[in-house]
Length: 336
Image 1: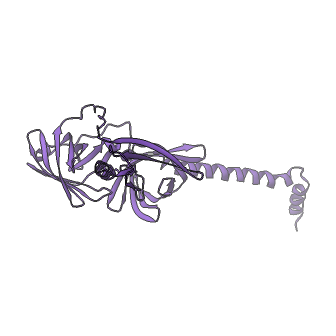
Image 2 (image 1 turned 30 degrees about the vertical axis):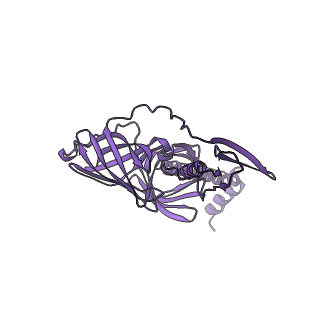
Image 3 (image 1 turned 45 degrees about the horizontal axis):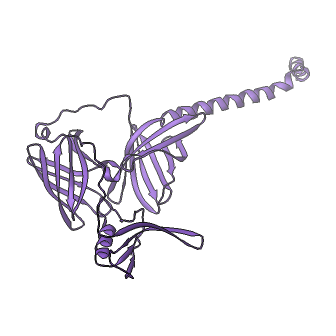
């Protein structure tokens, strides 16, 4: 080894700070990696942070949803609105985003709802799973500060675009509804509100209008609800069909008037709310008693699966209420 090389080696071997440098370099390098990782994470977050709107499609039905992703330090937080169910700011959990994959979950009544999708061109689309049932979802980034673009209405749609208010009449029951027709992407779209069920923005399908005939459908729990009607002036009238049961519907142009408080029906029998215990379990129900002197034969009515009230109300129809009313008028006590 040359004298120069020996001297070079000795100088570094005996320099007081030489052996500290690798440690310092390691620290600086680690810090650099941490900064780089944080920067990369924040950049990835920015791709998903924002307001998104879309829907869930499952078993032939569509459910409108809105999702807000926010950055909280080095984590993502998100909430979901479900307008048809009047649900707002539902907190999401297990939120993960590693471009282009997105994952989030919603704890819900029927079971954990899981969303797995991919981001492409400001649209996240993928698979929705809940209680073993698989569907799909799509959400698109929306800037809430920008007003909705008013698209040019084709002449053939001008007479129907707007808000219509009315009701469905079926089985002696009236169900109020509001239908809004609008143009999206040069196509005629429609959305329904059902105030009695706190449902808003229900997306209608197979919407068509060939003056004077109008057609639209609502995918609903009891079965597809089909509307076929005709326009006459500022009114739409026609037939309503669902699960083999026929009725009629009427819509008038304009927003709905403020609903009046429902008038309690006067019935010729007693009706009371009852509570009783079975060991440590508290049970409650509605009891209707015939006006005649007892003892009376009695019927206990219990609904099936799913969230229901004591009328077993589904889309405005109350079969348990109708059956209980019929039995009680015939001298049979009923506990629902």
